[in-house]
Length: 41
Image (cartoon, rainbow, N blue to C red; front, top):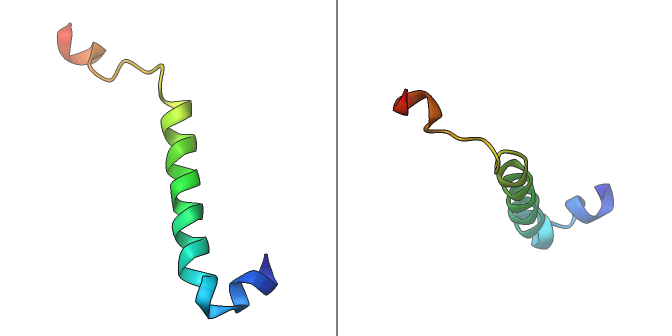
């Protein structure tokens, strides 16, 4: 991973992919949370 990040051509791409993966994990973990439960009662 360190060698890949040293290549500036792929640094932005790796960053975007990592951010997308993190966002996907957050959405997967919080998919069962009822965000509006506290507002309805």
